[in-house]
Image 1 (cartoon, rainbow, N blue to C red):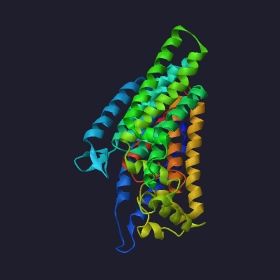
Image 2 (cartoon, helix red, strand yellow):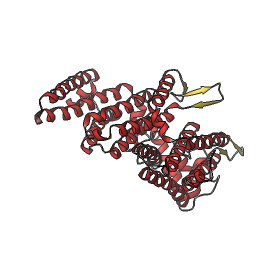
Image 3 (cartoon, rainbow, N blue to C red):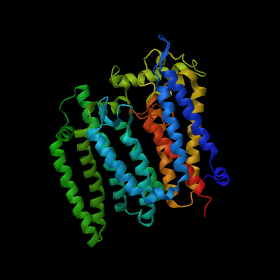
Image 4 (cartoon, rainbow, N blue to C red):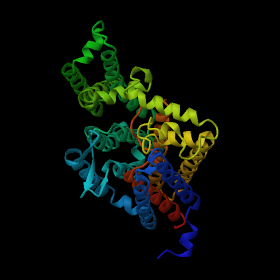
Length: 439
């Protein structure tokens, strides 16, 4: 039973901010689904309202549970969700060429990759708490990297680039807060840079019709040769790393660290070239210059910018947005919901929305700082980073400074799985907040 003392410990500011955001989201989903010609609505807002009710129940339920119990069963939670994710990747329902959903009798669908975010944060928080004293060592980063890479790999196979991309910055944030060596984190970033830059350069050259003339790029274009070279470098690196245990020598360190960066970067670039679809690689290029594909990937960004600009200072008003109501704006209930807000409520409405997000993120950081143990602090940090990067990537996407990834705006966009995951995450934050008073 929940006593008066427990109720006094609840962070009502966080709860109210979340409830207002979800209410605004449902209102915007209603607006974006309205047809001004037939005067009818597609009804998505009703489904979102039902998901919200379930979400509130889950939030309350998990806020009562001691968050430390999640740490005790972190491995079981991670494995269970991963198995469901793998099953979905190969046997799930296919929607818009992405096999990312599990359908239940045609009544509703769940996206397991959304819940994988929480499962990863929980197990990383527990692992980093256990290995707190050794986290400065580079090899201690291998386990967190592997725990992150496995679900990301299966999500990319679905393929769902938007969901997969959020796992990486969340992992980095948790590692940094846990005390990992910054130089090691930079090394991992360099691996990611090599992995992405090579396929992007090749895709760009093919797109503009440039052929030959560059021996280095022609070498990278041969995926099989690139795979052999990366594996050879990885082997040399592994030998140098193994010798370092028996012969402590600075020259060995100078070999295996850059060797690991280059070989792993090239290896991942091979994986991206093999498994990424052309449209996914083009999306990353288009955000740099939407005019490369104005009728394809760039169309979304162009229409979004028009919608945001047309809202001006106070907006056009509810149900009066030309881009949203006349159907020019794509995915207006989900990916581009912020464009609808900006068009109908203008600069003022956008600032209010961003202010609510900042308040939630601030409360998450505060809960992390005040947590009674390392696990709680890292868990709150991971959850807050999920919220932060969702907001940053989605809004960056709709204003044209980040690639179109299909990542929803947390609490606001239409989508039951993301809303349930977010409400569960808020419930965990509330649990961490209330348990700080227990000694």
